Length: 183
Image (cartoon, rainbow, N blue to C red; front, side, top):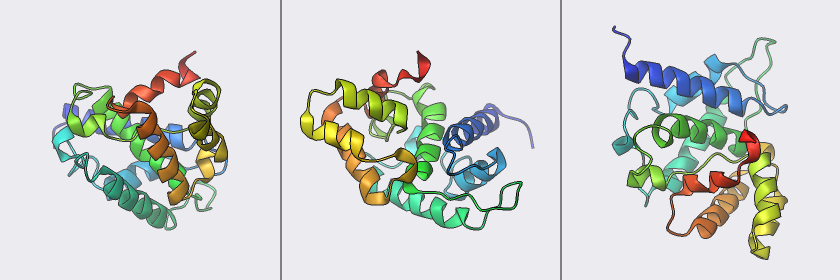
């Protein structure tokens, strides 16, 4: 099988997503595990273009199913020390969202309707910065309410709802203007 740009992009995105998501001390896992979990929900084989991402109308429902599938499948995985990584919806979401960011947002599809509606990666750096800079007191309470590594599905959905509220008609990835990880 030839080594294509699609294979290259998938391998890189799976690596980046796995490294970023495994940074949580509560859930360490190898890149191989992250890649297998992503491939288990279709990335790299079924989801190879922005057109294959869920529509803006179905993204939340599909994203929830993917998170559930990753959390369930992760229980069958072992890390090098033989323990099972403890995936939460926050960690599963970051794995998914970092993959999409690497392949589609930072690629040539940032302006595609399905990419603009996709969830951005959530982590403590982003939440802390939003809590410092968001003038909306209700959203500020949400930004400080949860740790991304421990988020349940309803908590994650509340945070994404606040992201959507804050961003209005703008692409959701633009909230990363507040992410201070590059400073």
